[in-house]
Amino acid sequence: MIPWERLDAVTLEDGTELKLMRRGTEYSIMLGTNELMNSRLSGSEEALANLAAERLDERTSPRLLIGGLGMGFTLRAALAALGQGASITVAELVPEVIAWAKGPMASVFAGCLGDPRVTLHQGDVGELIRTGRSEWDAILLDVDNGPDGLTREGNDALYSATGLSAAHQALAPGGILSVWSSAPDPVFTRRLRHAGFQVEEKPTRASTKKRGARHMIWLAVRPA
Image (cartoon, rainbow, N blue to C red; front, side):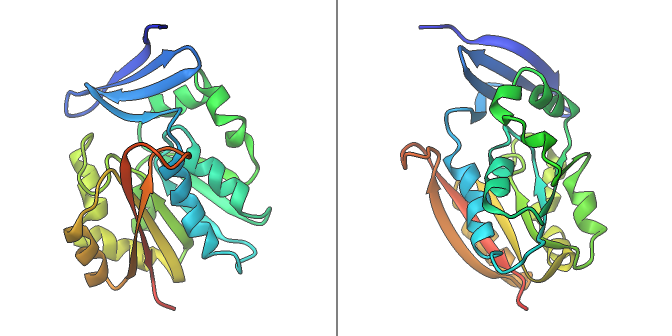
């Protein structure tokens, strides 16, 4: 079996190491000993975009904000599901992740960063949410490990009552907040409802073949 090769690494603000690994044509992003994502497992990240896009089919020029670039699976699914009138802003906090997307993982991204509908923002998605007022038709969050974060304490603010209130204000009426998580979280479901969202829980598999770990996606709608 081909061994894993370490391509690059960055030390995060809490001292943990984020690593890009490769084995043949397979890529993995690791946080310490925890695998955050793998290029063979894209099912739930694609579902994050597809579930939201299904509810935007009547909007000819939807405006999407994606929090977390990852391996680009959510972005690619959104581009495939939406028409040419869509505009998608992707916010990624870690500049090395952007460099990996344009460099060693360019084959995984398959040119999607060059799509004219895409704007890549190097910075905190929370800042874009807090400064928006009815600006976005959908906000898709695949940041950290979901509401139970691993990589950065500051990410917790996105999923707090204050953060969800900001997301509610940033969405247009009828807009959708779609949130990825590695596991269910009943407390977070209640927090979404308290923030004024209509909430659906959508369990989904990590693999596109309906196998692998079970993840959770919340679809939270700002009522029109």
